[in-house]
Image 1 (cartoon, one colour):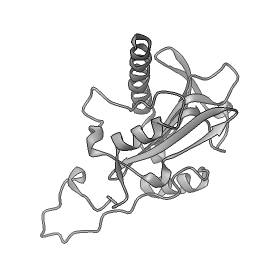
Image 2 (tube, helix red, strand yellow; image 1 turned 90 degrees about the vertical axis):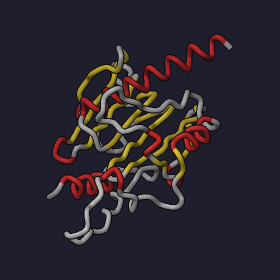
Image 3 (cartoon, one colour; image 1 turned 120 degrees about the horizontal axis):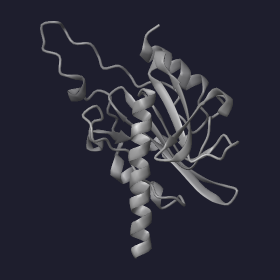
Image 4 (cartoon, helix red, strand yellow; image 1 turned 180 degrees about the vertical axis):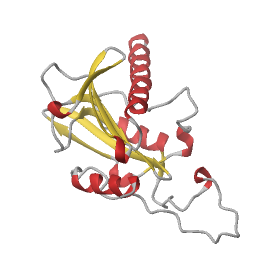
Length: 199
């Protein structure tokens, strides 16, 4: 079974109503004699309803209590976010125990990232006993990964016995990559927090 097909099964089996339930459509095949564009140049994955990531983040920020920060990477393996798009079908927010929480799904071609703000959990697929205890810039974190499907999830900060975090990031990346993206989000969160103090 291919990695993309397995990721689709995992998405369908481990997702709640606020999560993606199927992988994006694979771009249509091209005759062999026509030069095939590089994956980053293909546009058949784009939908008319998609928003820019910045627009989605600004919309979400108005409805959640924590800074809506975005992942970034100093290395070449993570493409710039201006080449990603957000799916408004999965731009959601709600109140839980008085907290305003939310999340969004962003994508670029076959790559998917699900970002959670205010509260992140395992979404019905286990608890901390199935996770690797790690940290995100010193904040306690829990990591799960499925190498065969290139699918990973990290949440932070978590309590010593809890199975939820304040932030979460899930997607089609290896565990070390998800941790690096989480660390970049934590840096952005600290920067936003310091900016608020000076205002």
